[in-house]
Amino acid sequence: MSKTVTLPLSYKRLYELAYAALGDATPLGADCGQLCGAACCRVEEEITGMYLFPEENVMLRDLPSYMKLYDTDFEYDYGRYADLITCDGHCERERRPLACRIFPLTPYLREDGGCEIIIDPRGKGICPLARAMTVEDLEPGFVDGVRRASNILLKNKQARLFIEKLSRQFDELKL
Ligand code: SF4
Ligand code: SF4
Image (cartoon, rainbow, N blue to C red; front, side, top):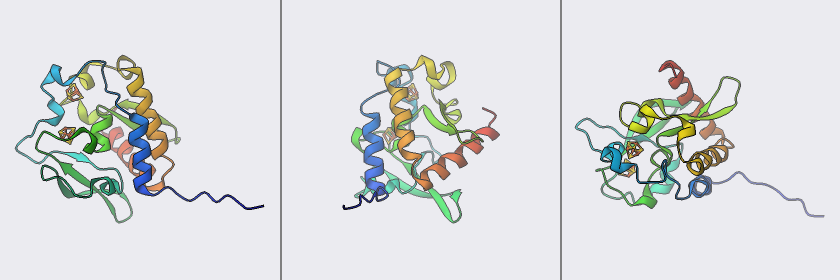
């Protein structure tokens, strides 16, 4: 009888699955950008942007001219550093990186390895939802989508290390 061999997912497939798990869900039923003038997309003078998840740049081949990639010193595994992506404040929705799709939520890995979905502490200075709401206040379909996408990512070693390292940074920000 032939044996079924499960190969690791390619990064492209990993992110396709994670994006699909989120679907079109958004933090509120309505367009939350109306509340804040889409503060998370506003372009500031200093370089701000979103970390890409490990190897997520496979989804950004033919980088549109309004997006730029930068190196960072955020080392999530030995010799592996996160890329930062910036934009000019507008994008095609289907080109958004994962960090934009899940904002203002983020997966958080506890020291015991369990995963929770939390409000991203880095968003509190930008996002009124992050400041005033709890995860339970957000659209359940969005929270479930972020949870499903996170569970997919956590099966990948590099993505898990990335989330783990970020979580320890969140601890330092005193969650
Ligand atoms: S900053 Fe928060 S409330 Fe405003 S558009 Fe972004 S996610 Fe929505
Ligand atoms: S890539 Fe799109 S969603 Fe992300 S910050 Fe830029 S304009 Fe906003």
